[in-house]
Amino acid sequence: MSKDFCDMEMRFVYGETLCELIEQDPKVMCLEADLSKASGTNPPVAARYPAHFLNVGVAEANMIGIGAGLASEGKVPFCASFSCFASRRVYDQITISVAYANVNVKIVGTAPGITAGPNGGTHMCFQDLAIMRAMPNMHVYSPCDAIELRAVMRHMARSRQPTYMQLIRHKVARIVDPDYTFDPDRAVVLREGRDVTLVSTGYMTQFAVPVVDGLAREGISVELLHYPSVKPFDAATLVASARKTGGVVTVENQSTIGGLGGAVCEVLSEQCPTRVCRLGVPNQFGEVASEQYLFDKHGFGPSHIEAACRRMRNGGND
Amino acid sequence: MEDGTQPQAAFDRDEFDRRAAEWRYVMTDMICRAGSGHLGGALSLVEIVMTLYYRIMRIDPANPHWDGRDRLVLSKGHAAPVLYLALASRGFFPAAWLGTLNADGTRLPSHADARCVPGIDMTTGSLGQGLSCACGAAYAARLDGKKHRVFCIVGDGESDEGQNWEAAMFAAHHKLDNLLAITDYNRLQIDGFTDDVLSLEPLCDKWRAFGWEVFEMDGHDWDAIYDTLNAALAVHGKPRMVIAHTIKAKGCSIVENKAESHNIKVPDRATYEKFMNALETKATLPY
Image (cartoon, rainbow over all chains, first blue to last red):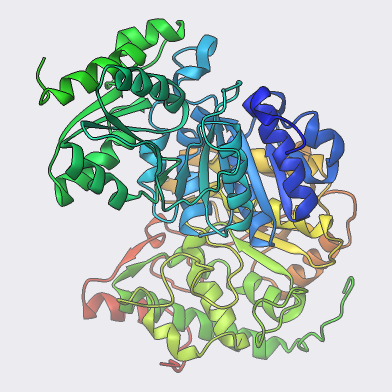
């Protein structure tokens, strides 16, 4: 790897990787709706590949339709905006013009969940994994670090499937191996364990790893399953782990309704009834606040993950 | 015709009149047979769609995905039956399929569907999205230096949707002169006259203000349609909008120019006969 992408903000990894994908396949295009600097594609893509860069203005619905039209002509458009605008604002446009029509549009929701930070409650989208997962034909990914992001993007450029991907904008320390390959049908077993299964995706995986390592030092063996793909969802790895540990904790930078925790409960209730504790935002909107404040308010930060794993190890009781 | 490479069918007014009456009869039967459907907005487009598919558009029925074909996006996807008539009539699929509209397992669903209907270029049905898709297709053609044109038919009621105006700005900003849109201005939407529900006026001025070259035509007059579309296609440097003045449910006297023609309900044989008898000319059904 010529650059250490793990030292870069994730949005610039997105921009740089998009440049590489355009270089490899001239059909790849970058669509933006006046947030190109926030997405990290301007200047990288805008300056180096202006013919592949299309800024439609503050018009997300139009961006999705234009993406569908480009895809119908063989292009591979990556359409980015803040996750609140890239998913819930254009849910019907994505449903009909992309997923129902089954055209090859890639939608990128940036600044997911609480990472919307100072933009506050209006911009904190806690339901994009849930609503995109509920859409037939749609594939839903949430990579956890720069290496995985690049692998997921390479897969997206090759695949012919409508896809939604969450993009963390800031820098995240390396989590997966440098030679990582992305398989949407496989969860990533980041730590093997016996006592409890911890399931995470996207932004929360970086917090889950040190919690699991800390508990291991106390002799509490937690199996950490990271799901870069929430749909398709690797049920087999989850079920095997739940059979082994007998208790599952989920954590996500999303609502506890319908997202990763929802997917886990759907699988386990049908295939391997297991006690589950879902951590995330419980049926509430966001607000302008620090990450620590929001973790504490909603109970899904490192200390809450650790406490939930301890409780689950004790049969779910305090 | 501009950039014409495809031989066009000779225009025989009597033959086109006969075919228009036949399309109206068959479409009404298809929709009645299905028990319900969007009759009014399909009948208003008969002359326009026939002119496009017989005299204007470059197509290859034997090769629906021919890369050099002109594209058509029916943004008012509920008028799909009129496209089905055009496509069957030009030989994209067997006319016998027409009798399967909305039937279980059909390849001809109520709304235009590119996934299962040969010759349909874009899947539509949720109003207000087609013009954006047409912009994307036109933009792609320009990027690739392709010479085909992209046509888009927009409904007047559908023009209430804000996304149309996002697309209007985009097309003008990028001077998409390979894009030609037609508004089916029959002045009726589901709940009544457009002037009563949400007035579009001054519609021509709106499109002009958005940077489009605007034309008006009588959407049932063969010569007006052909001449206006060709005049519009000759304009370069900006997108073209043709406002077509039409009559909703044209040709079916009991619901002509009435809002209830938008989505008719045909619960029984008596109602079916009422609709079929309201058509001036009978025709043979191809199924």
